[in-house]
Length: 413
Image 1 (cartoon, rainbow, N blue to C red):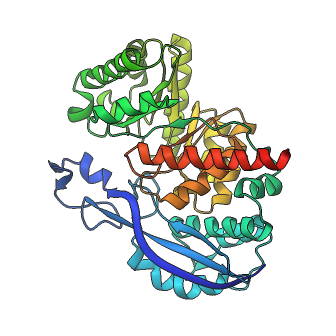
Image 2: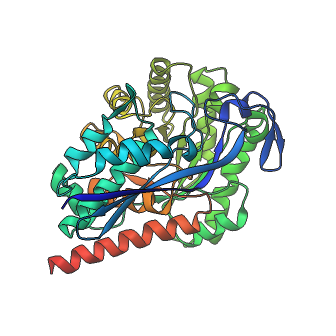
Image 3: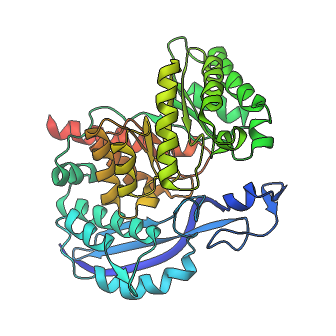
């Protein structure tokens, strides 16, 4: 089954771009915006709507496969590509990239994905968002041509075994939305709330008191309204703020995490990006040292690496160094989804936990395709996406898993 035509359309992402470096440099909050100048590559404003390009592959029999080119909220930071804007890439997509995709026999996925992931334009690698979208479309096309689910295509080509139960989900919420928190508790989400803490004085507190109060409040609310047998893990995403608060010294940082763990009470605690170093080498060194110190002190906090862990090669470095308990495999940052698949499988085979992550800045289609990757590769948990509304993302992911598992069970019987 060959690709007969390639159609591209610009569209909206599930969230916004945010210039983290400008925010951390002291930009003044203004409602949901910030006053000041953008400093990271690709940004016009500190906060701005993000765009995507939907890539549609028209097959010989008229079926249409598609994937969405999207990047992360905090683009242009810690080694990531500049913020993606559809208008800057749409002509290339409709011209040179369409030519490279047209005529391909999509009965297989992996070979085409790897070839496109290494494609160069003007001597340079394509933006990771483009690689992400076109490889999604190729996977969808192979599934349509073979009349299989996308999970089955991945399992067949990568030699993995599809899950027989849903993958746990980390609900991604606005940290100050009490109603949203209550809803994800009532829905018995396995991990929550992925609260975002980006500014020390505003979100953490100069003595760390605001974050301590947040974890205390979350644990208290789970106990108050959750079912007696509901035992989720509490997750906070710190964007390096504890490294800033403790001047990158891991001893006081570890002791502080011990206090957070006490506030979590009966619930497990996962902490993402407690520090962000200036280089990848330092990041690995600091993470590994912090992880070992937490174990020595008997502090049961799971560390999740994100920044400086953007590509398949990066993830392998962190896994080989045993630098973290989990890695957030941020799907758009890896470019082709073939890299995400290999990253999850590499983590599983090297004793590192894997979060099949991504960003609120994605779309419904990239989320569905990520869900199939999750079922096929079986990470420890998946991040809810797109958006930060939690409810909609949980609906998309939960229902996609339920449908796929029901289809596979029906076929087996």
